[in-house]
Length: 249
Length: 309
Image (cartoon, rainbow over all chains, first blue to last red; front, side, top):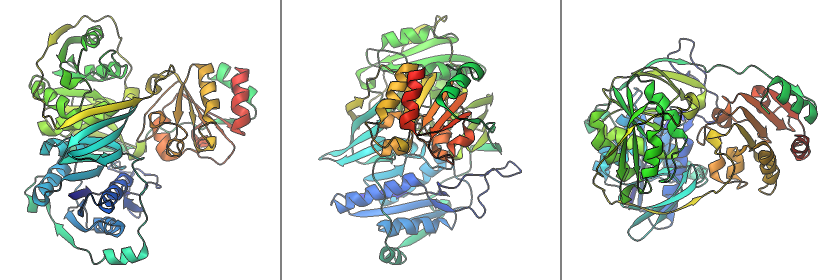
């Protein structure tokens, strides 16, 4: 089985996003960028499936600027076999990403696509479900366990009330939640080896997909700040404040 | 302009998240219909018909909707979408699972987790874990959106008298099957609807220690929350997680115990009315947003707090 794993280059999860003064977006100049954490989990899951003899090839794909090649090299260093960059400097919305990924799926014919459940920049949580819809495939979203079975896969999902398990026929889509696995660090020899792995650079036009946006961002602002509070010295003082000042108990 | 709201339910009860979504849908400026897709779910449709401001409830009652698998429910919504200008679902795991599938089939860019509606085509939504708010205008003729419960007051659950219409099930693609669920059973209020939440973090140290959080929560009639660190460490199950990728809450009172305050956690609770932080590390970032901070050993302070209430 071939597994496709889309990965996105985003602001590092430890960096606090700052809004630009002109309110056109978030300032990403000189900010540390990394692979979206949920996508690292997706790559790790694909590698584990390969290590278990359940997959033969892992293809990482990214849609983004030239620097997204670094993100793909990270995926290759972790254990992906080859990579595709669909290079664009435009912001590509989830629907257009899903259309591009569908074109990649049509060309590469994977049996499983594992995606992060959301990217930590736009927090949309849409791409996997949209790709599943465009392909007519079943989806196991917010996965905490993915088991390959005789006829397909069984996915345990993190849902509001707890956990839920679904059985899906293959080909299928999986999106990862936090507890699916703990991604490995790439070792130095593997980082060196990754430099020699195949990385093809394409454009959206190569796939004949229109990526023009449907949403216009009118402005991006900072949320209202909470006024700083006070420190209380004792539990008794805390209760007193909650009763009289805040009136919440 | 009419909006269709996807009801959140478990075939027996209508979930409160539906009420917030109805309010959001009504702010789009037209009529509001509610879709109940379920199995043996007539009682849910009857409850939905009572919601103030809802004029029509569509009931699709079919075994294939028993567990609201996205593969089955999305084609149903798509089959009904022609009559509607907007499709709205609450930002729950079910809404997040189903709605993008609908949007893609309709060739519409979904707007996720809307927290404010400026007009019928302009919406405010959080990005970067809520560290920025984007105002976006949709150019699609149909709007498909999930809405954040804390951004919209609940519509009145009674007072309405909507007409219930039965709609036919859509074709079931048969590529997914529900195997089972392991759902937490609790007498405590639901996290997203609770007035008070007591949350524990990494500082709790063990799942046994979480009992002091639960005990305080019971005294206050509160829900129990947790940070990602506490869930990852196995102290408590995933359905308690508050944060960017967990549940978004805004109770009257949020008591954060042994939680340092990572941005991902703050994203899920910083709209709470009053925030209390109890942590022995006085440098913990949680104190920067807490209204009342208590620098103390939680293992002494929490039982003392419970006793004194």
